[in-house]
Picture 1 (cartoon, one colour):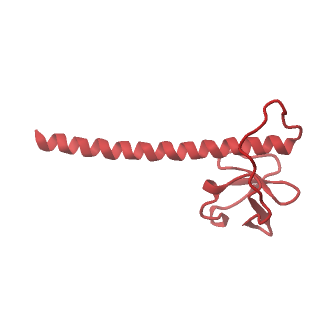
Picture 2: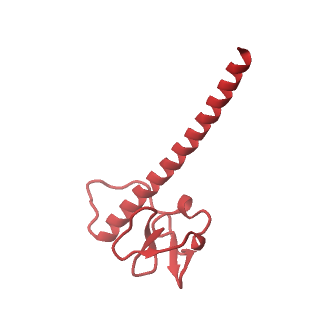
Picture 3: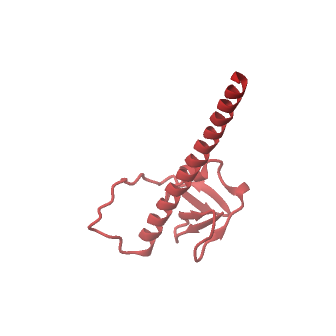
Length: 116
């Protein structure tokens, strides 16, 4: 995994595939167990080679004003990170649903086979 850290050691983005200019490579062993699920830009810090929860993190409002576009690169990176997180969460849900579908399909096939 690769993380992108701003000048205040705040993790503003991560990538499982690919990366960013100036990113840092992190081994999976160095990640908190729920990093991907709980990631929010600014929620984690990267200091002294460790990922820690940012104790001064404040939840941002989910609504964004469209007529006031972001003016700096950090804002754009945060938006990309948020979209990436949503994509990862969607992919995890898809995999879960595919597994449940396979289980139900196998169960149905067994019951149909038993009734024949």
